[in-house]
Image 1 (tube, rainbow over the protein chains, first blue to last red):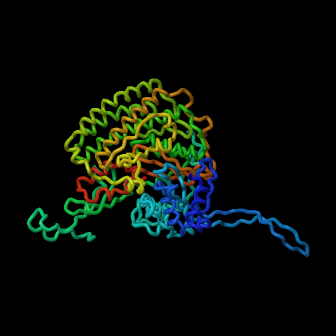
Image 2: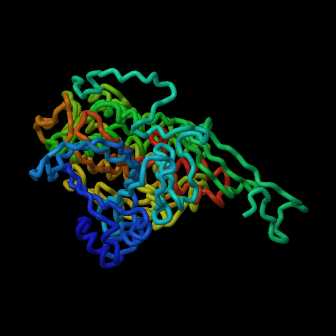
Image 3: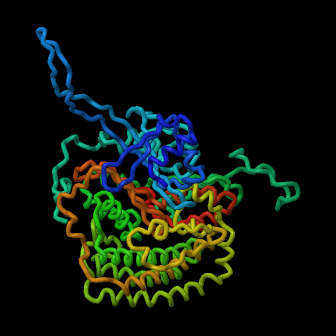
Length: 205
Length: 386
């Protein structure tokens, strides 16, 4: 029931026009937990549909969390045709480009009534600059209330439509978002971390 | 709602001649308060003794556990999971190990699965045992019930110490199994503890459930209907006390829970009395599980020989795993980028999310009931603030 392809066909039937706005995200690992990549504009509509559809009844939002994806360099080989001295030939070049980073909010949904799940929703903010706006799903599942506040606190995603968006764990005057991958704590010396056996995963136990 | 002026008394109901203008009182409870179970704080707004508004304040025990874990190897986080819910280190270990096993596709040998069930149910027993003591402490019966609970819990902690070397910070589970096999005589000692428990539970039930004061303090307080609890992500004994049969040991059947027969005790109203009784009944079911697990414990290896301890790099991907911890649904969410450290490490803390409806449970109750309601949720701040 929670197979993403089945979900996509249900969504297409119930919410016409959602096909372009909800896509499948395939998990490369062995856990088999694929996700739905939802366009932020459609998120609230899709969430309500998933919660209220009689065949799905995803009434329980178990886990909400943020993920920070840094910009990364991708090297690709690009083949182009070039004309050199009247002679046309194919040239393959290696091109390095930078993929922009983004912040992501991940929702793990289950159905208590029908005992199935998880259905995973991924919402991607446009970039990493604060405030990275995303729609809040707290009006659909109240369990997201504290967890979205935690993401706002530690990742700097600002959830529009959240009833009480404040920092959850840190104090209001705190500057920065410590769970971001490029966060440097004020008391860090900026030197590279010591490569301990434990950090490399080679510790004895 | 006017938040500075108290509502006027309806005509003819004022208990004194002329109340005149009264004001609401803002009261900060905690973080240094023995009944907040750690460094938890609530800002309550009171009309007389009645709670009008209540806002929880978090973060006094925050140490960014998740960031620490993202900077060290997978295995190095295992002892840190002990410190989340420090009463239940073994179930924390299990939730983390279960998620890493999903992430890496690791199998667990049968004997290790049995050991995990035995230890998880012992953890549930000792957690619920001290829960009763603390809850009664919140009601003013400070001392005796807690000490009865501690005495019984000590027998379980002795078992943990004999097996893992530590009474509370056990650090016992490993990806694909357990750290070591049972020492000689452990199973017999565990059997003695299990056999001594029903007598203790009988004594507790006699002491508590017929008690006039306890019933007056707990009945009809803090109840919320099951549908709202589900929407707010509340899990564990709170959900079952409201009459909803939802236990991950039955729903997900993780580990080998499908091999044991046990019932799920259900409450009716979801008030504090039901929550207390659910825990008492759950302990009896845990004893049933322990009874058959200790009887059927097979011989064999306790760890999957393919599980790598050194240089452990799970394949790229992500996994979410959850178990029924004594406090509710404990989940871990991990993303691997094939490096020795998790790219993302997230704990889904039942203690924090069970507090989502705290205000709803407390509004309209007396300030003295707030402590009892909070106690009945059963939180541990190591997990709430992480």
